[in-house]
Picture 1 (cartoon, rainbow, N blue to C red):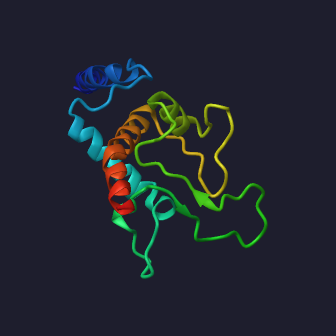
Picture 2 (picture 1 turned 30 degrees about the vertical axis):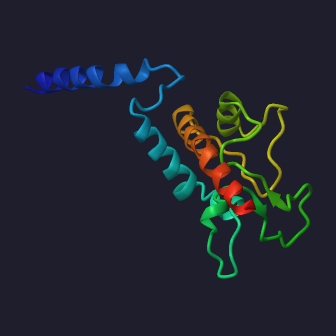
Length: 155
């Protein structure tokens, strides 16, 4: 009886674990674009909290939706001197100046195309490829929306 249970357990493990172990590092994004964008939005807005630095706030401390992820002054400072502290968080809506592969590599390694880490307080993220692809897709999707809001605010 025990031998039967062991054989069944090994079979179940081999059927479920082998496909997982044989997956390549270049994970394909979710098959549904809406799922990919939803995952990216979740990672950007709920996990990374990117809007806290990259979006302007009004006098009540609320994010200004019309300037979502379009860059903002960093509103906090370290209590001790930190070299290269950034006073401004750049625009990430639409990923201007970045190719998708550059953005994905940055999100996976914490290094930009020049091989340097972001300036503090930006954390050097280490996303897996699937999550980096989702974040990149979401930020890229904000390009036309953010540009439209920017144009409207100039009128």
